[in-house]
Length: 231
Ligand SMILES: NC(=O)CC[C@H](N)C(=O)O
Image: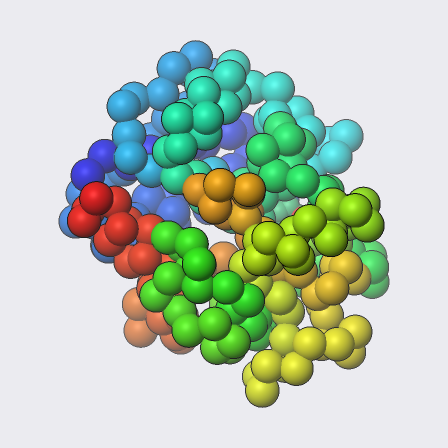
């Protein structure tokens, strides 16, 4: 299986992402520099977390104008599964491949800790290995994770079962008290209309082996990469 991880100037989770994908597929992904204008022929693309271009303007706004982006959009149109984590999610919204935007955390602080999220749908390659309603623990590390979206677009996300994860209590309660950054509806991750693109603020690639203190992120990679292996 061929996979790729795109690195931007300021990405700092690209190695973690490559290690996670290699751990699940047994094959190292191709590292693609943002300055390339074409992508290798791959079955899966990941946009890692980090601080692309120092988070100037808005997080992900400059990266979204990188030379590689037209090739990424073309791959998205072909239905190649794309995972954007944290800064990768921010970049996907700035490109317009996912709706809404990530603003400064409501508390104006950088949040770096493990959080609980509830799996809101198992209807995607990314989330099929989780039971809907199950609560998993993943790390977050961001200052711009406050998800906003126009009310009509939010209704569309909800109607089409496109909310992948919400911040929750360990028992799965969803309310303002268990939000971490001000995101509308405690949203932590969303899918595109075709369910081939997932953007999420928590870091599944940092929870895939016992040494990480948990393995709740691993099923996500097993889901999407296993689905490809069986395709
Ligand atoms: N870990 C990350 O990807 C950080 C994302 C982003 N630059 C933020 O701080 O909001």
